[in-house]
Length: 360
Image (cartoon, rainbow, N blue to C red; front, side, top):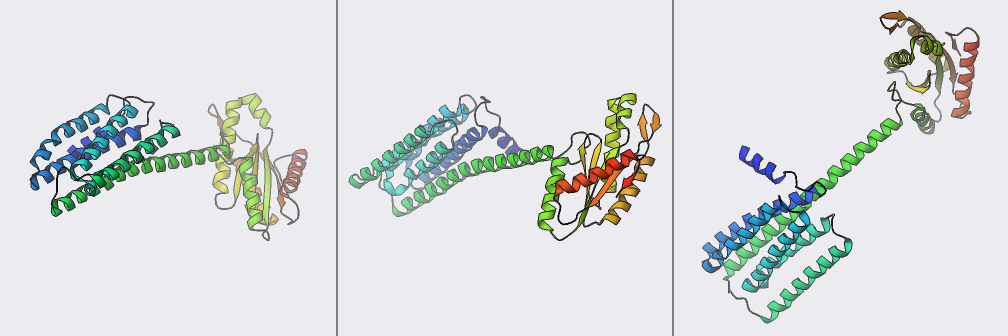
């Protein structure tokens, strides 16, 4: 098991040129390894069917495949793909000349075509030129076999076995190419999805308090009204009393700590009741789906008391802050902006009449 892990690690080893596609180089390495196995199986096939001359010819092919695999760690994947193409294409041509069209070796051009089109380095024009070359070679072999007999006449069993051998390794080769690149595409799509989710979260989250921001709350309310047009809800807008004094006397760092403490308290208290966001500055906004004005006002009154009793700390000194809230209920007619403005008016009425109040 450890040997297999080391082998896989070696195949997936980082490439020499960091500007190249690692997946393409790894795909080449696995393809080379598969061809090594193929030629070893082909050698056994030749021995079984007494093709001793052909079995001896396997040695230079194994050498070239091994050298190509070694060079994947030394040269660019573009150059190495050219080597792989020349080796495999030459083998296919010689095999068809030797055993005829029915041996199936000409089908090894298919993995080459797939590999070429998955390459991110070559232009579209070069890829279609490569496809044209493969078409020409394949057609040439087809018409050549119509007028020429194979150099080696295989028995029926030998012909069937060779066709099976070539078919198995052909599909394995295409499977490796498709597996590696489909996995790469899926991984890229997953990373893109996670990145988009992260961007969406950042765009809808206040960086200081980690609460949702105004944009998120407005979208949430619009969706709620669209999906629950006949259900009521309430909103509340709150503001920390004399927050500028906290910043001026205790510093902005302390002011930020107060905002984070208040946000944590709101998050805990509204967890199963509704939603809260940082509206801006020292203002917080609340949205209570399915809650009427009486229930929402009672809840905000309890929350206001909890805020006033929650200790804040500044350099080991304890102090307290208060808040003022305006609460409003949806009337099934006003738009969101009008509803928020009415809550805002109640908030500032409370500010002008003593603060530390809940106006509803």
